[in-house]
Length: 146
Length: 386
Ligand SMILES: [Zn+2]
Image (cartoon, rainbow over all chains, first blue to last red; front, side, top):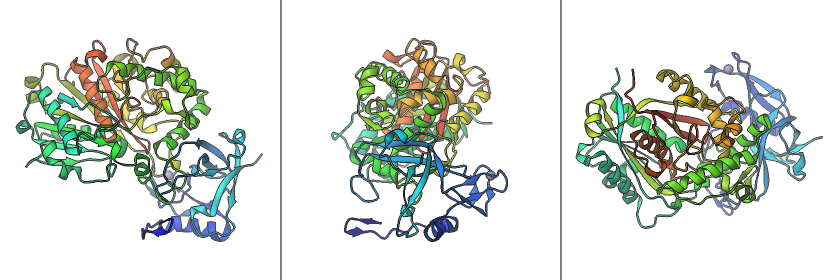
């Protein structure tokens, strides 16, 4: 974790399923979900167990990269980002994206340059970072496409 | 067979946004002394203590250890339970189980928080997954805003409907000397207050509060000797529904639906709207006042706003909700769920003073946690029939 000039050595294991997601995102700009063999639900982020079925999952499926806004908000109040220790730049769009082929929602920034376009059901696509490092920020944000 | 359990005493501090006059132990002790006095007991009569707050909200942990003097826990079994927003309700459920099991006769349950001593939004954010959830998450308000948007899109409700809930609870708070915020507002004032996260205005949401609450629970053998009108606990329940925030069914509180269904069925309640007389809903923002009464089964999906506008949930209405003024009038987070429980108990016991609803046979209190989970307690005037 880095905050200004300071760095703190926190480790957090994202697991083998999460690692697959970030490798595919970094190397191939692909969004990976995982399908439950019992209920057929496709989860993003991928994880080892379907909670409702308590069933092990292993079938990775590519979803998106397009999708639509499942729900959203626009953050307008000032607060300190605990990840950085700095005030978060507001306003920003907070989108819950339903990737094509997925059943859960994926949280990320959503472009609010034209706020009128940001609504539930609007089509979106990810804008990838030029230099990808295998983190959630390899997607910079989602933008609404007409 | 489980023992029947009743609440025989409750106590709350006077809640404020900032209580520099007391430290955590002393704040806890205020509520404990009042609850013991209300139950007509001394600390020597108490067999065990369950205590909880929001982890690391005060920048200090292990409250079960350092608060022993104020809690009255010297040389007693003291258990800490902490489950985020639901903490206050979960400790009550924990206390219920300790007594119902027959292990202890009288248990003291304590919830508390000094929100003024830390960064609440920062602390809440660190409760969520660092890889998948934290990039865009902005504390409790962001997730609730997304829930409200989803509900509004599905059923055509508006922020005006939500403002009506805020007007109700802030008016009810005028009757409660323990509420932190006691100022009436109009629908126009709610809608004109600053937009925090679309569609949530400042006056739609709860404050941060310093405060504590304590409740004494006793088994059937002693409850009736201690208290003329004990509050019998008919059932408790809780449900968890999701791993990551994006898994939640945004716009519906599935955990509430399942918990309510279980508890009402167990008590033989078929028409909750008619059979329940008062609800103390853990409602951190106004929109939840519409959405979650649908999930509880009070009204059908999409009919919440209409029911609120009819005045049915106001004092004097068919089913008053939050006579205390609720969470948006007072929110000492680790105590908030226990305040709902204590207020529901006072309604059943008939000692809710200026906020008393007449002839309460059944009351419901709930707890809500940021990951869309629900705790619930059904309180009754008569002894449970099972
Ligand atoms: Zn499944």
